[in-house]
Image (tube, rainbow, N blue to C red; front, side):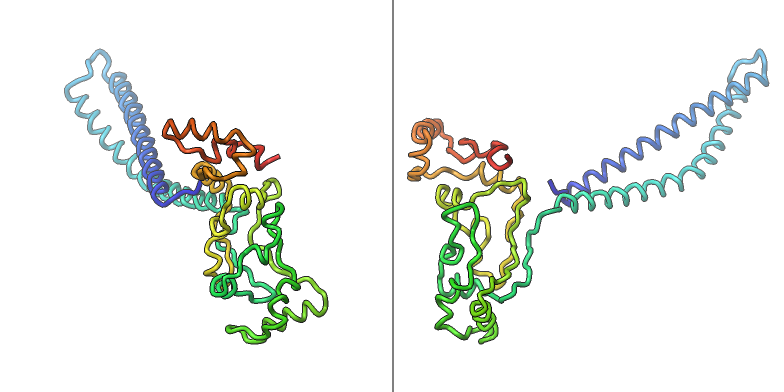
Length: 283
């Protein structure tokens, strides 16, 4: 959970009210103690007399004088402590937000060894994601394309509309030397997280853009989503199972459950078929 500016403002108000309450309580306790001390002193100096009249007036003057002295000493300290407290909280809130983002790379767009323009290939020319990322329908990983896949086209296309021959030459050099292209991975999940591409693409029929953003519009690919656990869970809670998905109909008692929930006016989601179980992703 990331703190928003509104939540920070609310907490700051609460902290200010708390400090004001503490300061007011402190003043009351000090005033009460001073009053009791002055009363005891007056009665000791005037044995056998009741506490009223001139003595009471003198007590009031003494209390006012004492309060003014106390206030002149404590007020600057209170102001300084309040400012320090608020600044400390703001810094702690910033550290908390940064800590929440550790391990996430939303917006990450590293430089690649070859400037590959997805907007040109996937957008203008309409090349399907699965043509290059072949493993996405077959296993856990979405394979990074090897140079020979690229050369299926670039054996004939030697020049690009944006970079000329410069980037295609790099590709042909990798291919000629039989060296793998050292692409920089963009989307990373922690080691304790299990994610299977084929399960989502084949069984779930999820489009690549749902997780990776509008890649067909990106000249330079960047991580679009946070890929945090909350982001995945929200998707599982909202994603409705397709009635015509033969995978679920054949694998689970889907039809019966779906009909029952549909009758009750509910939608059958991934969450309701076990999509929120911890062991699905962590085991």
